[in-house]
Amino acid sequence: MTLRTPWLLAHRGDRAAGPENSRRSVVSAFRRGDGAEVDVLVTADGVPVLRHDERLPDGTPVRVLPLADLRRAVGADDDDLPTVASVLDALEGVGAPQATLNLELKVPGAARALVPLRERLARVTFTSFWAAEVLDAAARLPQTPRGLLLSHVPDRGVPPGVGLLAVLHRVVAPVRAAHPDARIWCWTVDDEAAAARAHAAGAQAWIGDDLDGLARWRDALSRGASSSR
Image 1: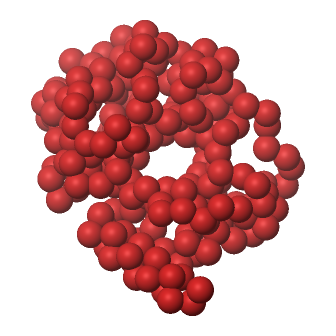
Image 2 (image 1 turned 120 degrees about the vertical axis):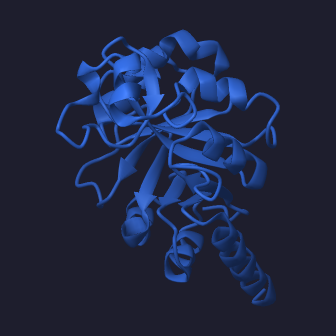
Image 3 (image 1 turned 135 degrees about the vertical axis):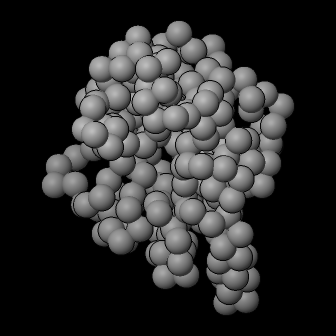
């Protein structure tokens, strides 16, 4: 395991700049940190959009509504409920070259919906709780890094084609012990204890709600590691 300075990704965007998964929150995360983790759903007309909840408050699934109807139903404009394509447009030239847009594929079919954007995914990494969706992304978009989201220690091996493990901070230590050579990201790093777990596991990226806090904890832990050498 190689320790390195971790990337800091804003969980669902930088919510100091706008609502979660809004385009402006993602742009702000690229300006202030190392990128953003956001959620991808697919509308009835096959458009990949940034939104966390798979259902509206009345229970209607997002997948049964065309994009225009979905925006009307939730009272959102194209910034508050953006398409992935529009977010990629907005990120052109923003942030460092290595800044990362972590697209969580929340539903089956999300990878397929992103295929038309294949030439624009140079700074994208896919993750999903759905192993089948990660493998579909590997088959359809093999040049884009992808990983499996974990909230527990897996009771079987990680499928081939999974490039990284994005791990809940509470189980990152046993996951690291079970997979000593894996590339690991850690979520949601929202306090000093979670940061310490991510640091001890050598996580390459920390995903959290507070970019200032992430930077503060990273710097403190880095100073501590340097002084102990």
